[in-house]
Length: 322
Image (cartoon, rainbow, N blue to C red; front, side, top):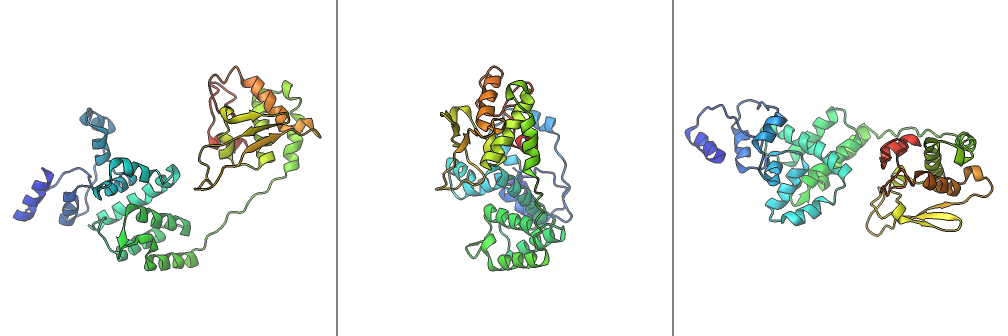
């Protein structure tokens, strides 16, 4: 219906006030953008109104009317004849954190093209360079601009059969950004481990300390004895734990930040430390398992909250504890 209306407007060369959905995946949308004589006004949606309006419609319809960047990538894949199942597998190649990054820059690209009445799908490398220049002038770092470049490549922009991120001019532009705005590495604060160890020694015997202190002591000892990321501690599970005579072994089957094809996640091994029982992670873990067996219910994660409802804690919480 909207497509026919747009064709009628073009045919009659009429001046109209057009009110329509923000639906960039539709073929008529590009035509509407080219007909604009002024910047469009976006009416923010009322969530309750939308929910009541589209109640009962399929989830695929909801996806079509949304614009979140990554859904547009999915639509582009399916427009190329790739099935929905295959598209889902391809979309899984980007982790959730990467998708959040890409979503931000694809939205910016959409707005940039919208304001200039340009087609965001079929564009030129010159416009992409202008977009990156715009981001540079907004104060974005070299790393952020690199993410924007990757997002546009994921979006499917190609020039001369070359992904936009690998185009010689785009590569040259990013080198210029690096020279003009070099990456500044944050100073790493190195803290004295001996201070922490003195505190941990005071939290003894473990049978007499609170569940809170026991939890914090265990997390810190795991971090110190294995030099593991907070993510690895977060992913330790009782179902993947093996108790031996003088150690506990944990296998991690989830994807880690450093995971890649061919990479095997290292085991987390918590060995006993006879020279100083106050710092023995093996004994601390034994006490922790004993103290939490009745409160963890069916929770499989090793580290749980020390307050109700005693559920699995997030990776960021473990980072704060450390």
